[in-house]
Image (cartoon, rainbow, N blue to C red; front, top):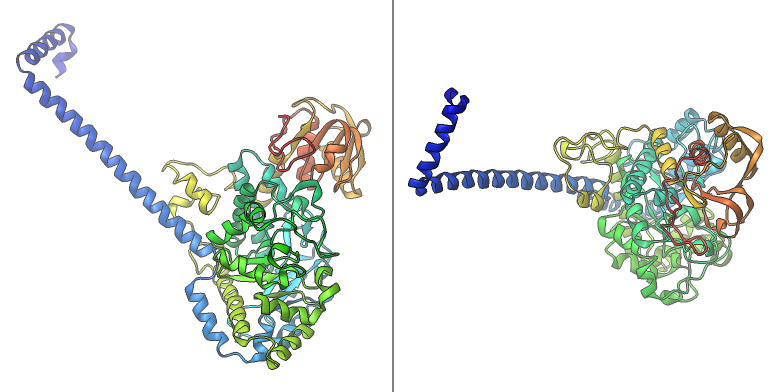
Length: 598
C-alpha cells in the first residue's frame, strides 16, 4: 500500500481499478452493497443506543416523579393501619394544624401532645428575632422541641408548617436566602429558563426550611391572576396565562419536594380572579364552570394529574357550584378537586380569616369543612375548640366517623411520605444522588420529559451548580423588564435621586447604586412603586406587581418583580445601559403579557 503514495503508480492503480469496474460491474455492486449494509448497520446501532438511552431516561424520570408526587401505596397502607388503632380523641387531633402565640414553642409542643394534633404553623410572630433578622439557632431548637412532642412512639413527626412563597409572603427571612416574587419566574425569558428558575428557587428554599426542621410549606400559588382587578394575589401568582402558571406551579411543587418539604398548590377554586380579599370578606367568583375550567382550574387539574401531595381550598363563594357557601365549606367544591383525580390531602386555607370567622363561627366551621370533604383544618380560631366540636359532632351523629377516618389517613400518609422523602428513603429528595442520566437536569416532570435526555457529553446545567444566593440573583437578573423606554439607553450615568418605596427599598437601591459607582441625591429621579398605586419620575419602577406602571408618568418604566438586594443590582444595571431580559407575565394597561422593550 505504501507504493500508492507515488503519483505514477497511484495513477496506474486508479486506471486499473476503472478498467476492472467496467469489465466486472457485479464486483462493484457487491462493494457498494457492502458499504451500504455497513452504514445501515451503524445507523441501526445508533438508533438502538438512542432507544436504550430514552428508555433509561423515561424510567429515571418516572421514579423521580413517583418519589416527589406524594404518598405511595406503602404510605397509605401504613397510615390506614395506624389510624385504625386510634380512638376518637386522637382522630380529631389528626386533622388539625394549630397555631401558638409568640415564640413560646413549649406551649405548641404541649398542645400537640394534649390533642394529638397533626401539627402547627409558624407565622411571623413565631419567628425569634423577627421575619427579617431570624435567630436560626433558636428557631431550630424551638422546632426541635415541637417536633419531639408526643414522644418517640409517634410514627412520623408532627407537621411543622409555614407560608414561604418568596417575595411578599416570606415568614422566615435573612439569613435565609431572599427570593424575588413568584411572578419573577413568569417574567424570566425564555420560558425554559423560567421553569429552571422556579424549580431551583423552590428546591433551595425548601432546603433552607428543612435544615431548620420545617416539613411543610403552603406554596406555591397556582392562582391565575387577572392583573389590576386582583387585589390579593398579584405578584404571588406566576402570571396571567393558565398554561404558564400551570407549568411553573408544578416546578415549584416538585422543587419543594426535592428539597425535602411537602408543598401545596393553592388556592382552589382560584383567588386570582376575584375582586375581594378573603382575609377581610368573602369573595364571590361569578365565572361559569366552563370559564373556571379553562382559566382558574387549569393549574390545579394539571398538578393533580401529575401528582400533588396537597391542594389548598380557599374561601371563595362560587355560585355555579353552590351559592351562598364558601368553597372551604362546600361539598361541591371538594368534589371538583376529587373529580380531577386527587387522592391526597385537601387542606383548608386559614379558618381564622374573615371570610369564615365573620359568618360561620370558629369551632363549628371546622366540622362543616370536614363534613364537606376537607382533610386538614388549618388554623382554626381555637385548636381546642375545634377539637371538641369535632368530638361533639361525632357523638351527635353530625359528622360521619368514616369521613374523619379517611381524612386522618390522608394526613398521616402525607407525614409518613415527607419523613421518608426528607430522610433519603425514596428515589429523590435531599441527599439522594440522581441517576447519571438526570444529573444535569434542573427541571421536573412533564417539562423534563419534553426536554428529553441530555447527550452523554452534556456539561453542568446553567443553574445546577449555583448556590442559593447565586440562584436568587440569577432569577432577579433575568426577570427585570423594560416596560417603557428605549432598550439599552443610559438612564443614569453619574447619580440618581430615589423616591417612593419603603425605607428598606430606598436603602437597598442606594447601596446598589454605590456598588455600581453612582452617587445618590441628585440626577434623574427613580420612583419606586409598591402595590397598585401609580407614580411619576424620570424612571418609575414597579417593585412587585407591574400594573401600576400603566397609569404612571415617566420617561422609562421598569418592572422589577422583587425587592431583594440582587433585584436592585439588576435595576442599576438597566439604569446604566444594560438590556432588561424579562417580559411581562401579565397585561399592563394596553400592553399584553409577553411585552418587552428589549
